[in-house]
Image (cartoon, rainbow, N blue to C red; front, side):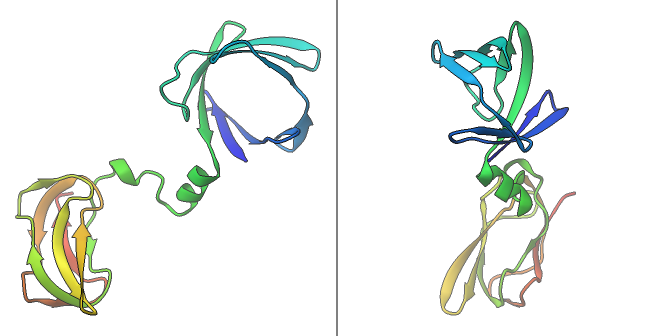
Length: 165
């Protein structure tokens, strides 16, 4: 199943296979591939010439249908799952406060107040159940406060590092 948006206005749920289902309606297009980026489609006795204009982003292509350009957004089942889990925009988000994922002992801090970090920058090492866990930045930001130091014991969900907001 795919969720497709056109020009950020029109949404379609598309299921492909032997037959196409678009928003629950069965369609039987006749599709001929002319080249890697060009197709000819017959649907309901109408002819469509389709050309993919940009090939660099398969999730957000720009296509031309009979000379009219459309911006398309394509989300597959994995994109939908990530969105449902709230993880769809993690990569570019501003870092939030970092909390301890489990009780443990802080072995060392790896950053300083005022330091600018990007997503996945190691912040500190937390020992829990005799295992060392690298705690990383959840996003981009500037360290405002480090609330723990080496040797501190922490509880689950205790704030360890605060970012400037």
